[in-house]
Length: 343
Image (tube, rainbow, N blue to C red; front, side, top):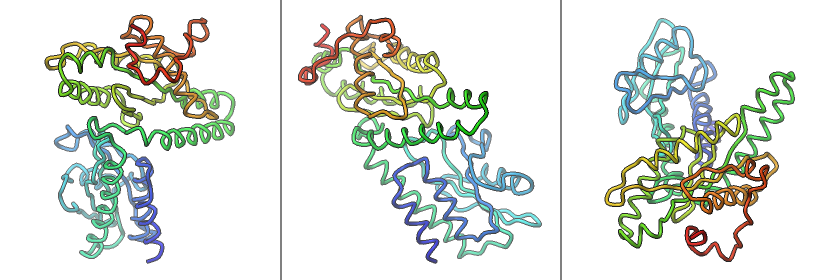
């Protein structure tokens, strides 16, 4: 009982959505016993018949267990009870989990035991899934911006610290590889942070009213989610400013991702308002950084984009190498509308 309570405590105290799924599997293993196999499938929301299922993490995804799991995961319905099936050796179940608003796909919990699963065990598995769901909802309630449903400003520092921890871990792991593999891993993990600011947003509010301004922000959040990948970190910092953190092998691919969003925004038709554009500045994140330094660099690149005509994507490192970085905007001026600073 005590190990299970400790596993439940780990779930209820975790603030990192990426770790919650693993903690749920750990708790399920404690509940079902050491001979059990557990796993997580993901499924796209537009999948109607189980197509697009992908095994994400866990044990026992091969052989008869894997075949039963794939079939059950395809049949599992959101809001439904546990789907069960059995072979000569394994008794399996599958259950759709509560989804975070930040996740593009839904996740399906699967398990297999070497004994028939009785009603008591099924109820216990469902209770674990509900505890997981309660934690997901609490995180969404406390960490998401009420309008755009992106991560809010207060979650940034904690997210940034986790990012640095992952970068440091990747660096340590890469040192254990041979030279060729090390170079590959070092290029696989770089993180890039972008500051995105809507051009002439004050003019939108003044001309069309705050109701249409909020509609622009709401659709901006939707475009960000549709453009970037599941796992990219998307924040609304307040007002018309957004911050995005992505992983990309190099500057060109990072810039292509930010440019794809800038272009999609430019070509999106907003009700009444029409065309809306944004200015983007981005920079590389190193493992020994502080968040204020990284934000300062991305802001400088974004200010350069504003100053040089708006509706542009600029990289701080590229501007710095070319000697084109403008003087940082004094902090006392930041209370003004950014677009007013650049005419």
